[in-house]
Length: 251
Image 1: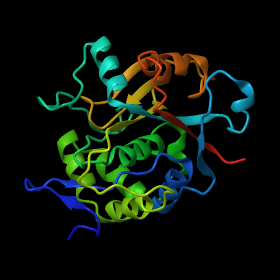
Image 2: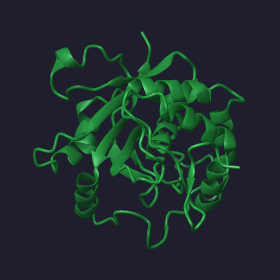
Image 3: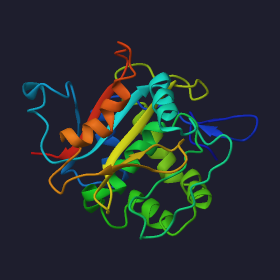
Image 4: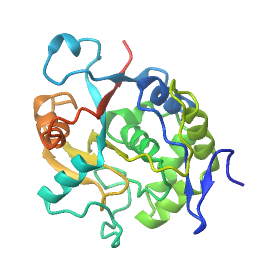
């Protein structure tokens, strides 16, 4: 039985009320799912002005870039990659030896949820996910599965659905109905086990390797920004309808 507010299309695909783009909502949701209260999300107001970055603790374990569709499309075209996996998924990774854990998105308007899970399931943030929690079970159940089976496990998780819908009603603006397409993409960036920067978005053809980082590089390092968020921003054409949040340990 779908949670109240979840919309199921005539084809049977469910859609959630999208999350509001603010760190308080994101932080509330990951804590609800079983992430330690020591971890939280912070607004990133600038990528170049130190005074506007001083409130963010370091290291930054993950970044989430909330981007308009045209930015995402432009980067995919430059990379020679499809915008989405509408023509079929070719990525087939699974198991504990993968540098990152990635979930194919099959739930409508749940880009934010997938980005949050990608942020805390990978890199150093993983150590802050409490054992036996909802999120820990989602991750551990998913790791050995192939992408399609992993996606189904995520899709069918009732506790995950209920937590998302609680968070979707926490924002300061009125939440749109689940059947209305949100129009923005939530793209997570995290460091993998291999020390590379990984772009993690559930509608892509798997995780995207953005290259090696130095041991000391976090997600706010210049190397990570140039290979990640700033690549999207250069296609903005003056568009300011985007936002960035950082995941870090609370001070």
